[in-house]
Amino acid sequence: MNDMGHEVAVTGMGAITPIGADVEAFWSGLVAGRSGVGPITLFNASELPVRIAAEVKAQDWDARRSVPDLVEEPRASRGALFAVAAARAALAQAGIAEVSRSSTRVGVFLGVSSGRGVEPCIAAAEDAPPDWLRFGPRALALTDPHRLWWISSRAMTAWLARACGARGPTMTIMTACTAGAQAIGIAIHALRRGEIDVAVAGGVSTMVDPLAVAGFARLQALSVRNEAPAAASRPFDGRRDGFVIGEGAGIVVLERLVHARARRATRLALLTGYSSTADAYRITDSDPDGRGAARAMIAALRDAGRSPAEVGYVNAHGTSTHVNDRAETIAIKAVLDRAARRVPISSNKSMIGHLIAAAGAVEVIATVLTVTRGVVPPTINHEDPDPECNLDYVPNRARAADIRVAISNSFGFGGLNACLVVERSH
Image (cartoon, rainbow, N blue to C red; front, top):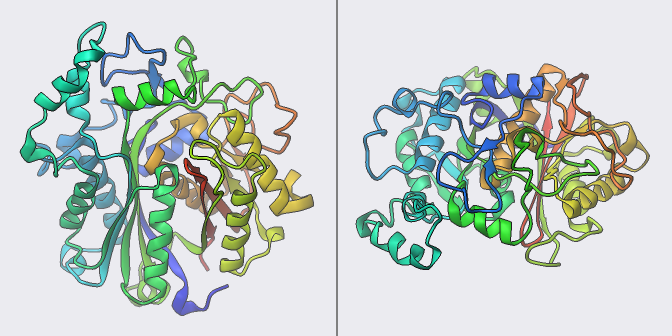
């Protein structure tokens, strides 16, 4: 393991998800095996082949309560509100006061999805059925040119830095489904190098919009179980037919362990290893043999100074697509070898859908909770085992387990892979 000066502690967490708009509600939903997938309400999807998504529910998320100072700000996008609310919850748990975080020693690292404006897209598609020939011109006409920067991807990082009073390095990471995990990994490196003492890191995504849903549907990547949304996301199951797109945010406060100890902060867990690789295979598919994913897991464990035999849990990327689930299973087998069949593996996406740029960050939070609370969340909808996916995916019911070392996987378009090692705090 890295020496004390290079260890990184998680001291705060904030999450806004389709099954709960705070960490405790999110965790309760995971352990209960509750699905957050339902009919799309954020726009009129009646003419699309996919009409389901994992939205943050209005009854769970009240922006006026969570971010009252920003809710009337016309320049703040839905994603910015999510990110700021999650960050404030994480900072509050970490016990970092306003005066303490107004520092050049605090950095912000945020994984984001595409920066296009959701509001014009939704408004332009309000016709039933949508007039797609007029969609582009209407979207442009509905977009205030003065808001173009404020609804960009970079703007969400700026909102977050301003809300945190962070004057250290900031970075916007746009690497699709690995963005949230890579943002956390890059923050770990900055902390280890001594550039900062505290990092606010994670991911946010609000891609439940007409362009994203239509685009992924054209790729035949989304589940079309419109009549049974709760059963649509079924990672590793033999009847899976695609992923379910979701939205949300996950933010963690990270500190150098020596800094956390000096201020007597509660250390929720340690992030001891990180690695990122590329498949260099195909833009829209991972290497079907899982070689890039396996290299990421091996390198992350090496970075943590841990052996594969010490891994007690894998928080899988587990998208519910045929190619990804099979490739990830192959990769886990290659890394864990004979131990692969005894290590519990679960996919949070079975319940919250695929949060794209926020997925890796929210799943790291779930992994921290798994390690600290001794419960492995289930993979729901696992009813018809796939012979090619024949590991222990913790089907349908949560399970008690004593886990000290876990890994969290994130894989994305372009053959991007990221893996983080989470350990119980000393």
